[in-house]
Structure formats: C-alpha cells, structure tokens
Image (cartoon, rainbow over all chains, first blue to last red; front, side, top):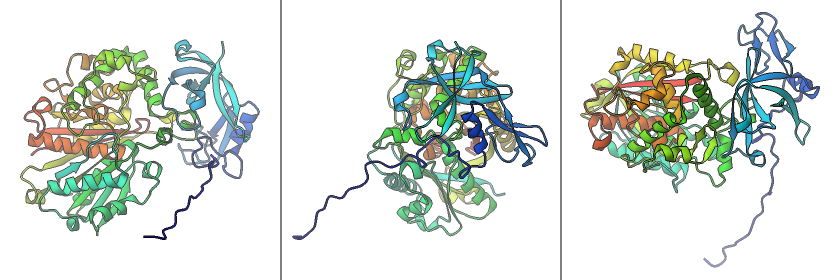
Length: 154
Length: 388
C-alpha cells in the first residue's frame, strides 16, 4: 500500500458556450441555409419563408414547404408590429445563461396568421394586457449574432 | 395481433434521491423481478427503456444496453431506448406491447427511468428548455412552466377559469399522494397554500407545477394467453390512441384546446370498444394544474371550458364521475420523465388487485386509462387497461 501516488489534476474552468448549451441558433451561411433570415434581422426586418407553389406562410422559416414539399420558397416581410396573444413572466428556475435577466416577460405574438413566441422587453407581467400592440426589437449577442424580441409600444 | 397483458412490475421511491441513474435502474429492476416469481432476466427477449434525456441529465447515451447489463438481461429480439420526452415511458410500453402483440417477442420489459436532480439545477432547467423547438421557442426561455402558464392564461381569458379552480387539482392530487408510499410529496396542501406558494410563471405557482424527480419503474409485458403462467391477476392492454399535431408554438392546433388529445381519446375508445363513461380510473398527465382541467374537457367528461367547475363539483374525486389520479398524479408523485407512464401503469395494476390503501382505492374498477402528454401538449398518448 506504500507507494500509491496522489496527484491534483486541472481541468479548464470555462468552456465556450456555442454550440452545446447555447440556445441561440448558428446563423451564418456556413451553418444554415436560412441565413437570409438573420441578415434581414440585422436590417431591422422580420421575415419568413412563403411557398411559391401552394402559398403557405411557414414559421419558423424553412427550406422545404411542409404543406406541399416544394422547395421553391421566397422570403416575405412580416412587418414590425404584432398583437400580444398570451404572456407570462420568468420569475424562477431560468435555464443557464438567463439568470441575469430574471424576471423577464415571455409572450406569444400574433402577426397576421402567425403565432410567434418571443421575449417581451420593457415590461412587467402586471402591466401587460392580452391584445396589446408590441413592436419588433433586435438584440445582438456579444459574438455578433442577432435575434428578435418585442417590446411595449407605450 | 395477439392480446397483451402486464403481469407485474416494480418501482423505486420517487423524489430527490441520493442515487445515480444506474442505481435507480438497479432498484427498479430488482423490485420488478422480485414481483413476478417465474420470469428471470434470461427470459426477457425484448427490452425497451423509456428515458427522456439521459444524455443531458447523466451524460450517457446508448442506455438500453446499460440497463440490460445491470439487470442481467440479454435481449435476443428487440432492444432500444424510447424517447418521447414526458411520454418516454409510455413509448416504451407501447413498443413492448407492439413487440408482443406482433409475435416478435413473448417476454418484454418496459423500464423507464430519469435522474433529474443535478448538482447545478440551472443545468436541469436548461435540459427542460430544449423540449420545445429550441432555436425558435426554447431560445426565449420557453420551458414548460412559461408555456403552460400561457396555456392557463388563455384558458382563464377565454373560459373564465380561476386560479382557485386550478389549485383544487393540486389539493386533490396531493391528497391522494399522501397515501402513496413511493410518492415524492406526502403532505396535504390547501387552496390557500397553493395560491401563496412561490410564483414560478404567473398565473402558475410552485404547487401548480409537478416536481423535478428521480425515479425508475419497470413492467413485464407478455401475450394474454401466457399471462396466468406468471400471475393470477394480470391486467390487459385493450386499447390505445396517440396523436400529434405540430411542434413549434406557431404550428399547434390551438393553445387553449388540446385537439390531438381529443383525437387520441377517440381512437383509444374505439380500439377498446368502450365509451368514455366506462372509464373507472384515469391516470392523467397533470404536469401542471391547468393540464388536468383541460384533460377533463378533452375526454368529454364535461363541456369545453367547464373543467374548472368539474373539479369544483368534486367530479374527478373517487366517488365522482370518474376517479382522476387516485395515484396522486404527477403533482403529488413527482414526474421522473421516462418513468412516469410506467409508474401510472403499475398503480393501475395495484388498483385492479386491490393493493392500494383504502383512502385511494377505486372499488370494483374494471377499466382504466393512462395518459401522457409531451412537448407543447402537441403529442398525447393513451393506453386503456382492463382487469378482465
């Protein structure tokens, strides 16, 4: 039993968030075929794909129509305003990377025929109302990626 | 197709367990084999392991062979893990049932397991946030509580359901779980206590939500013609329904009405050749209080929008229109994802055998259903069990 060696070993203290536990999608053309969506976001435009064959408006954006399986899709603008369909507030139990924002509001925003889930900024649960108008907002991550949120208009 | 029976099973105590994933499997596996005298591990031809996220919660994939190894099972016909998030355990039962019904296997095991407590619980919450479409819904921190909170908000807005009515579901299920020795939660709650509990995602408070839970459970599935070789009191799988519409929030049939559940109920009743009024016990997926209210409506025990009144009137209690969750439900027993459906089925077996405490015993029950929803309630899975 005498000469058993004990050694302290080191592991890296930090690991890079993308891709394994990162909620935000990889958005450049090397990683996805819908990189145009994120390019448009960068210009302040919320867009999605529409099928040229059957006319289906598809959300989330995609490369094949789930209505008729055509791959002939085009990008269309959705405008920058929507109506709050439902909302709540994350008060406890956030996932990794969200704790610094708690509490924050999450909602479902109706834009035409679409129901888009999103963070609702500049808001507390008590002050929001179903049916309220909300406006598009773009957030940029520290690595340059972008994503959409909405905020109260008033 | 051959008629199929469940002839026995075993489970762990559920809750925050000081045990690893593989230890939960060993506990449940031993309990399962101890429960049936003449099935040994070497007799098991098909093994289906219900596990929702072993790769996240325990950093391990290819888990079915790990279960087989630890229990001495050497499957010769079918082995696989089944993942359908909160319905992963029911997926295991369904595939084991299909293996036996089709004649592929004569002895199948469906074993479900989840180890959800982690040293850093934010990691567990992260795992629960890649269930909905991660890049478009999860990215907004849309885990289960916010999604079901909005479901509850719409139900309150459209139908006038109240937080007090939702709390009554928690009161009922916690009441029954006080009489279930393997349940995670063993204390009664009151409407006031539910309403005053920590706000998680309004309108849902802590006691509106099922727990984070460690647990495992397994059952044996055999052809009905062989069932009496293993037990005098088998139960039979006599019907099934499962339906899915959409996945991302935009593509759900509805937020405030679970259309795929209505379809699954219709199919389950059709295949079992029964009406909804023939159901004596319903183990329903009460992941949140609002879920059970919407399930009363989708089954058709009450009108759409009247689920809150249904529980106010005491109808889902034993002795009411239908006994809903006399096991204690997910709210009372906890929700170890992959194990939940197996735990439900074992409790139905115990009900049929009269092996549950008097206070939660449904006397003379002949027909029962177990139900699981998964994801954004876009998938609903149902099995119908019969005593005879």
